Structures are given as structure tokens and as C-alpha cells.
Length: 270
Image (tube, rainbow, N blue to C red; front, side, top):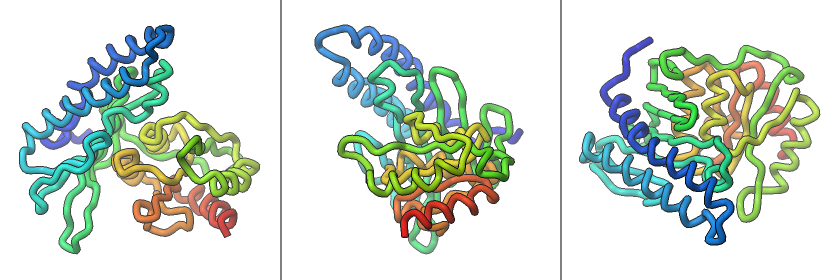
């Protein structure tokens, strides 16, 4: 196992500092389920508190770097320096309903000479299970000290596929229905667990064989996409191209399954 870089140590420390309060708030929100005031405002406070803790820790360590955060939006830093991309609570609906499946996710995006940016470091941390999925470009993907590899399954009939399902005000129902109709009859199962960050981490870990979803935010996917690539997988747009972030379409799997899935998905969208 490679040792953490100094940057990854900073990122993991920030996530772990925010985690105990999130765990306490999660236990509290379960109690709020039975109260009249309802838990929604409490959860948004938990979200903001976690983000504030992470922001303070990362700012202290890298004071001239910018941020892209779910709650605060974009905070400008030195344009020639990297920036942090942060979601302090991916899986807010789960948190709200007392379902123990959510994560903190932090990525680092570095500026390139051509004016584009590239994610080079990523962490997805599950506070309740204490699983720390992390990756650095060129150094592999890991959960704690265990190396991650994407699934080795080659046949769609054996594949367990994750996705997100559109809901009120979110997602393209017609597109999702067409893709589901093409993929579901060919695979061993489809799962909707409700945290895109953890879905991607689980593809990197070989727990899921593949994943598709669209209309995600950069903080949902930045760390997870790097994890999958460093675990030997592929992430493309729905047509198999390299414009996943630009098109806001994400199709992830190993090489054999990706080739088969992207033909199904692209065919469904014609």
C-alpha cells in the first residue's frame, strides 16, 4: 500500500473531523422522525455544519485554494492552484429518513496548461461504517489499506448494475425509462441505493459491476470517477465518449461490460 500523500492526509483528516457530529446528528434525526416539527430543517443544519468543519480544515491547510461546495457554491481561490470539490452529505434523503447509507466526498481538481481541469485526488468516506475509499492519480484506488479493483465479470447476465431513479423535480424520466427498458432484461439485477458517491465507490470496489446516471452534480461524482479509473474501470458518457462531465452522463464498468452496456444505452437513446 502506498502511504497517503500529504494532501490525502489533509483531506481524510477533514472528513473524519466532520464525521462524529454527522453520526450524532443522524442518531438525533431518527428521533425527530416522531416529532411534529419534522427533521428537514435539522438535516440541512447538519449538512451545513459538516461543510463548515470541512471548509475550515481544508482552508487552514491550503489557504489559497478555491472551493466548489454543495451548500456554499463556488469560492474563488488562486486560479493557478487546485480547488477542492466538496459534498459534506451525499445521501441527504437517507439521512432525513434515518437510513444509514450516506457519505462525505472530497475531491481535488487541478488546473491544466490547456485551461481545463483534472481531478487528481478523491475521497469518499462513509461515517457509519468507517470505510474510507480514496484514490490519487497514478497511485491506484483503495479502501483503507486494501487495493480496489473493478469487477472481473464479463457477462451482462451476471452483472449487478446501480443507477439513480428520477424523482419529483429531478432527472429525465423519459430517458431513464428507455435506458432501464434496454438494460434491465439483460442483467442480473438493478439497484437504486440513493448515494451516487457510494455507488461509484462500490463499482471501484467490485461490489457493483456497473453504474449509470445523468444530471448529477460535480461534487456527487468527482471523487468516484477517479476511484473507478484508478481501480481499472472506465467512465464515459452514454455514447461511450469522453464527455461524461460535459454531457452530465455517467456510464461506468470494467472494459468488457462497458462495451456491452454502452451499446445498449446508446441504442436506447437513438
